[in-house]
Every structure is written in C-alpha cells, then in structure tokens.
Figure 1 (cartoon, rainbow, N blue to C red):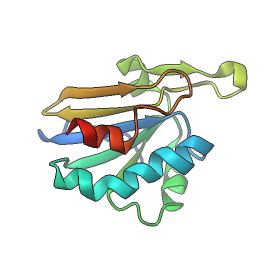
Figure 2: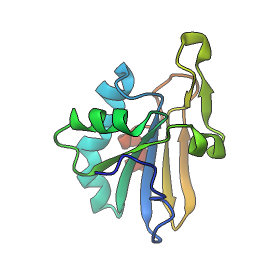
Figure 3: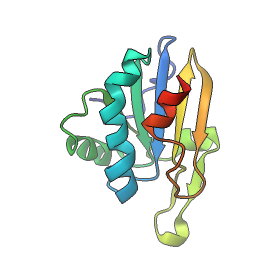
Length: 140
C-alpha cells in the first residue's frame, strides 16, 4: 500500500474516487468518512470506479499507521499530502491554525473520469453531509 502522493490521478485514464479528510485519526474521519468508503468500495467498483483514494494533509508515516487500523482496507488507498501541495492546488485547504492543527484539507469527495472532475462534493468547515460514499454512489 502506497501512502505517498504518487500521481494516482495522472496515471492511466480511468474513473477514480478521491476523497479527502481533514486529518488522520480524527473522530469524524475515522468513525464515519473512511469506514463508509471501505464498506462501499466493492459497490463503487461494480459501478465502474477503478480506484478509491483517501488523501489527507498528514505525513506518509501517519497515513500508513492509520491505514493499518482498517484491516479490511484493501480497496481504499491512503495517500499523504504532507505539505498540502495537492490540497492547495485544488483550492480546498482549510486553515485550522486557531485550533492548533495548521492547514488541512476541507472534507470532500471527487469523482474523476479521464482526468476530468465529474462530481465535486465539497463540505463547508468540518461538516460531513455531502462527501460520503453514499453521495458518490448516488452520482454514478
């Protein structure tokens, strides 16, 4: 399992779900967002999704440790965006410096097909209302 940002969206032309969480090991991310995609990964693949990617502004060692807490995670790949470079490029950064967390990613889920974003479900603040696996399944 690769936990480094590895240009997964740029290799091959395929359909990919990329979802982002503000931080590894945080409550909503760990208890709702990631488990939802793990549970629905097979269903997403049955509808044509080639890969499900989870990205977070964390270092690769944290992402690897977090991925290990989900033994059933074979169909979700965890990627680190350590310096928030990719998150900034998307314009989806969330500054949580006042809470001592620094710059993070907004919570979102993208459906990318042939390098084109077909669905962009982007949350406001720390909400979790539109970026879950069920929301992407509805869009397929």
